[in-house]
Image 1 (cartoon, rainbow, N blue to C red):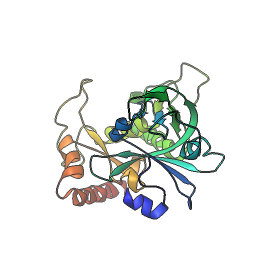
Image 2: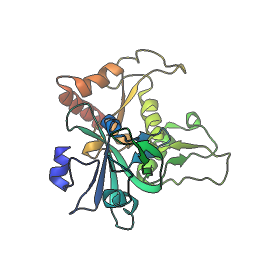
Image 3: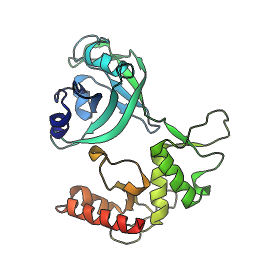
Length: 256
């Protein structure tokens, strides 16, 4: 987190951090926000509900709150980060845009009810991808990769005219592609998945080779499927970074 602010500026002690020298507004959220009466939620559908700034009394639509609402007209990008357990550590969630805001009644840090501001933010490029009338399981691996790439480049557009069409969150398409390619085998250790999930499918976890906080994207070239043990090894192992470099080299060889 310190690296982000050192490079781009913005108040490192604020959940909403406009960058004076760059067209960015950084948004940070995490469990600590609950201590101050904030109610943030990143839903499975991709919508991000974010509580505005103001610890005491009614929230007002000015200052940093206005920076979120007016980011489009100010030509600023909204970039969302989630706080991790370690001090000053965050994970990049993605670029979002303002869609709406509401005024729920929420407690402030002194447990006094007040009028809050709760923003409704959506991922840039849309919430979902249109895959026609088929289920993801009915799409070939090659076409699934194309759609996974489209989910990043914007080559595929969501269609909402017909209720018979099927849409998926963009990240789900990338995830399913990674699992399809792995075919039940961990791409780290080479062992079969340790167990079957509740649907009877081999259980593997999708790993980003380049972290989102470092600019890594939900792109098929940046994801592989790992068993839980290898996935924990990458993130929590003593030589996790070295192991991740080995995985990157493997992935590059597969792509040749």
